Image (cartoon, rainbow, N blue to C red; front, side, top):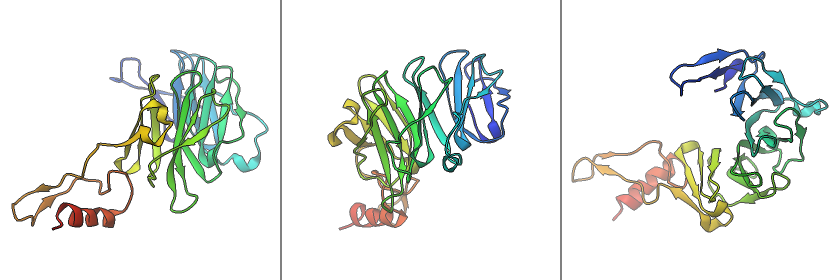
Length: 250
């Protein structure tokens, strides 16, 4: 696991005990991915990319040289590998990097997202098919976004998200095309067939918001938190309007 001030901790017994490792930096780290017991890559602020080849004893800076100064303040938020050699890192401002040698060297790519986009998670189910999720603040009020590649990251297309205004924070898919995307406000999106068509996506759990009535006169109710609609949209005001008009309306 990784975190603030260059934190890296490692478990070798299934998470029962953890050991702190020396990353050599004090910048926050936001993502880490192990290729095997010895090789791993971690990413973080200022486009930091670290790699270890000895199980975490020594971490080396692998951020590519020649990055424009205007980009150096951005954060890398997620890293993933589709094979032992092909690596992908995404982050703030739509930044997108690739590696073809197991994370030893990285190349800044032409981004498939806009600079108003924050890519928070990237995941590959196989060597060709991958997804990246995040949030864009353009146009206001912003919206969750999902991208997919079917050619190993060379090109990406934006997928349907149901119009949610919530940040999408993490994504994972199986090789059969079933996937889950989670975000702020407790939102959960489920996909079939790789999420290629709008009909492949659904909000989880399905159905209406459950309201538990304490007494039969409906004067007291128990509401589940957080207060949001199942599609992740709206405010507390919208939620209460839904409860009053839809659940308890005439």
